[in-house]
Length: 211
Image (cartoon, rainbow, N blue to C red):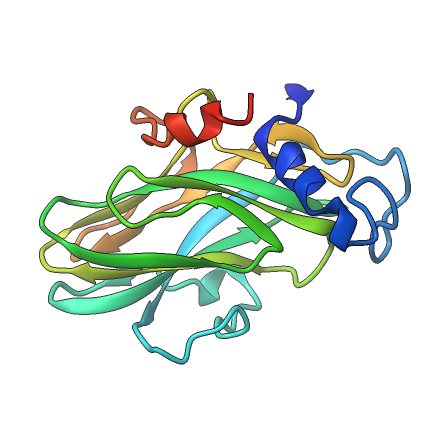
């Protein structure tokens, strides 16, 4: 199992510590200090028809079978990033999104307490963090992006420049690699399973400010 000291997400947490109960204490429901996550976290993309009334509570997902990962060209989608199988809890995620050139897009809305970066164009990435360890729901929305799918193609998760994999943090703000990913497809069959990314996102300039 690979674990390393947390970087950007921990720094983001410290930036808001004065406004919270603290990032390294007061963990929420059911967490025992010293308990560690294993690298089981899975990250899936879930498609919903675009609506200006979306919220972090909009997805209704009880099982993996409820994930909607296939859409049709010519439609606007809110592409939700869903976390599951995350063990005792999760405090942060670093990820990027890639989609075909020529599609339209708008800003991403996150469901955490703090974010660095934003996803507007293909290859953009962001780092999000919660001030307290999140232990529910079982399928937890982390963010969503409004994307206009003009043609057939795939919406892919990717990792951030400077990382080797899609990374998340446990309740002690230690960083781990995600286990599996589930992409979304527009008139194509999307990828799912164990994953080694081939294209890093392009937000290295943002992350470099916090090193």
